[in-house]
Image 1 (cartoon, helix red, strand yellow):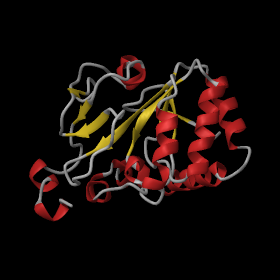
Image 2 (tube, rainbow, N blue to C red):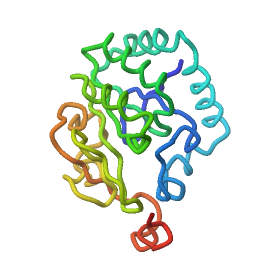
Image 3 (cartoon, rainbow, N blue to C red):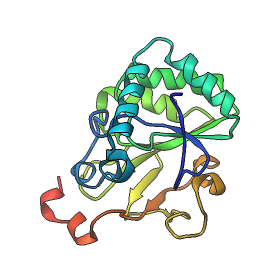
Length: 206
């Protein structure tokens, strides 16, 4: 199995992740210090090995066929990309475009920092603009560049409506559905690790 079922915030929705930071060409100083892929269960050797295996699988020509079949078997309405990791190459994005087109009844959702990578931007926006894809640009206060026209945001301690899960209003993404049923709003997420003063320390601002 390449996909996994969520256990905490995602709930029972399946997801796909990759190795933390090494697959994140758009990472910021915030990511390198505060990414939750650097903490908790994600730092176990077992999870690291699984995500490395997923990365290797994503390089194969049959990746789209394998993922599409697993999602069909899961029989769910929503699919999360990526709990950790990100879009690292044009070919990889094109594989997800193919998967989303093959499964129009499934909503693919998540956030990405790869909008910051010029060589990925066009294909990433093509993926974002598919009718069943709900990708938002992930941003924080440690960088000055911002995504271009057409992007909605997942913003850490920034503008947007508060995440219902962070506010204790829902038990999981699966029981909420807001991020994977509407494209027309920005979402504000709580800082999960460390303090706000540490987050905004001048040596993180670029």
